[in-house]
Length: 340
Ligand SMILES: [Fe+2]
Ligand SMILES: [Fe+2]
Image (cartoon, rainbow, N blue to C red):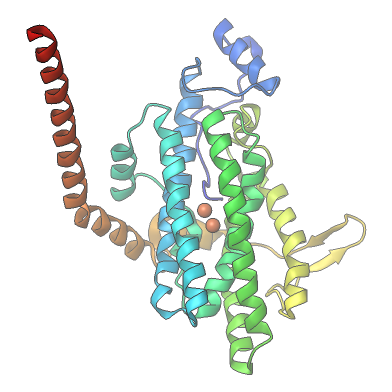
């Protein structure tokens, strides 16, 4: 998902027998659906896993702005441009809520960004694909934001309070993102032959990478058992992926677009769509840094950081000046008090 393959660092799921009393009390609170808050005791592995998960999620939000930012100057109408800009700004906000949530676990924002820029931290594989036409912007909103909602609605109930609360607001905004994407696709699929061809081509390129967003199959997922016990992963990768396929295929039908999977068919017995095999070698290759845009995306983030240095320095200098002014005012009031 926006956080794929998050490693808990634990080989086996912890059982009550393995746990010291404080950990048993911590797990009992999670089992009773009581939120864990920043100042509560928590196992080090829970803290580290959440830092990885939330920071990966935050990085995905801000790297995810890049493929769309590429289209702000080329949006077909003023209205589409204003909507796209609002959507991209929402993503920046999502990044900020999530960096703030991660900071409550004792890591600084500078450290998280340094890890991203050095290639130590990951972001979602989906943002390493290029946006070639305007239909890609529609497809991203429809599929990528649609997949994000699928994953993030359950996270509103996750065990870590600051993360769960950030998710509530994020999900509301994601639903607007999904609709704006679908609205673009609706316009294009009812448009000229050329627009219809663009919509078809975009779906063909984004379908499989969107399914890969949910991460490896359950059979190949390591460490997810412990994340489930901690309630920071509430549904498995395959469950989420199936829900996404079941929701999205009828939407494609409504657009008159064909999902590029010859094996896709409704299964009356299971009550779900069956779908074809995912090319996991492509997924692992993109995660390793070899997708079509990995280098460009990372370079764009590093450049933004370097070019923004003067803004950070100016903001700090301004804050220091204000603090010094306030200290002088307090000192002068105290002085007057003494001389009065
Ligand atoms: Fe977002
Ligand atoms: Fe979004």
